[in-house]
Length: 332
Ligand code: SAM
Ligand code: DTB
Ligand code: SF4
Image 1 (tube, rainbow, N blue to C red):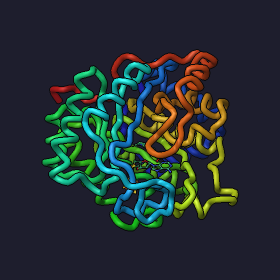
Image 2 (cartoon, rainbow, N blue to C red):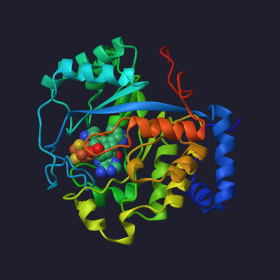
Image 3 (spheres, rainbow, N blue to C red):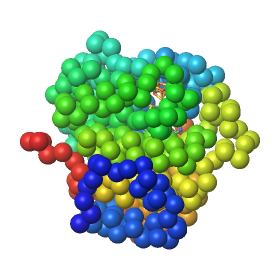
């Protein structure tokens, strides 16, 4: 078995990126098969429970108050409306329901409502995930007590690149929340975005930061930037050769994440709407084994369930029904 290591050096990770493509894919597939069924892909559904008006200045995000996008600020949704949406997701075959809020951090007055959402979704027999921005340890405990299975909090890019993308918080702030989530016994979902005009070195640094966390995130979302008009990055990259990440480089990033974090679920997240089926197939072959289904992510479009069902049929993929190998045991 490939050992689960957290002592990867940047040089080792850079060397993986540099491998001939065929060799990289072969290694990623070997590692993948040690821990995962190669034909099973997890289905997750996203819902934006609080959209827009976010005080953070993330350069990629349509929901930042600094962006001039078409997204309008809305209030936190009612619990019942969230549960109705979760019911639909379950009926569509989704295993996990991920609720996202455009907050820097939740306020104390929001906590009872988000806790009720977690408890309600869990009672339907779905896994729960939330992404609400920064959390204190006490807030993480409250969510754990409500039954939260996963918390998504991305490092987004390399530590060096971080300050170019976001200035209203630091890479260290991100790590602090990740520690609070871990301490509270919640599974961690942490990844980032490729295609923000970063260098290969930044992609190495990004995977390195994830693969050397004290414990690998149980889920690693790899998003391809969805360029949104009115955002810093959407506007800056529009019409340039950097407007879309090279497909092969994207697949390489997925493969290196798979090799360095063998047990984790690697999620092919945002960006599938503009990705060819062939590239998506390569991502699955490189070890991606989770996707977001449905026709919407948080504020941008997604491929839609029927297009995905057709792709799964074409590729002989089936939705994952069992548990992920990296998931923390309740007793841990
Ligand atoms: N506000 C919370 C936070 O930032 O932690 C949670 C929601 S935020 C939208 C979740 C993640 O979505 C971000 O960390 C980023 O990685 C991803 N994301 C946001 N906008 C994106 C875009 N335009 N393209 C690709 N990924 C994006
Ligand atoms: C993640 O890494 N990707 C998801 C989820 N975590 C919350 C969000 C993608 C958002 C894409 C842009 C949008 O729809 O606003
Ligand atoms: Fe706010 Fe999250 Fe968007 Fe950043 S990524 S602006 S924190 S919603």
